Length: 94
Image (cartoon, rainbow, N blue to C red; front, side, top):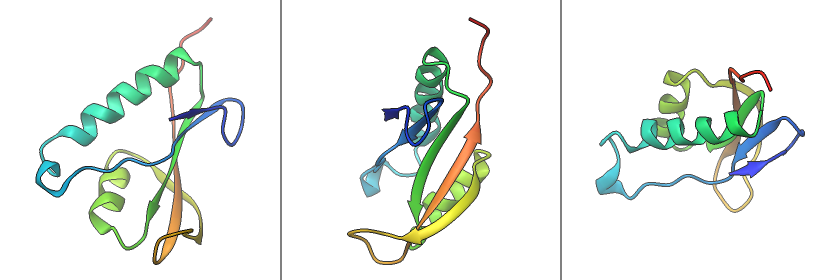
């Protein structure tokens, strides 16, 4: 996870992959919860990521978790497009 990208108050999940045998076992929500805790400590207002459009299970997961699509762009090193998604975070007062 990158702090301050693409804006100072946004964190970006660069790449999150699970082995096929680990998918659907609840690890995604657990990792997301940990990432959000870190983002809250960093006082970020949002968490952003990109998912490849040829991965419908991942896209559905992020949508279910409340992420909304911001834009699509060619996926470097992958077939298809990268769908950039974001979800706002509740930050605590300093």
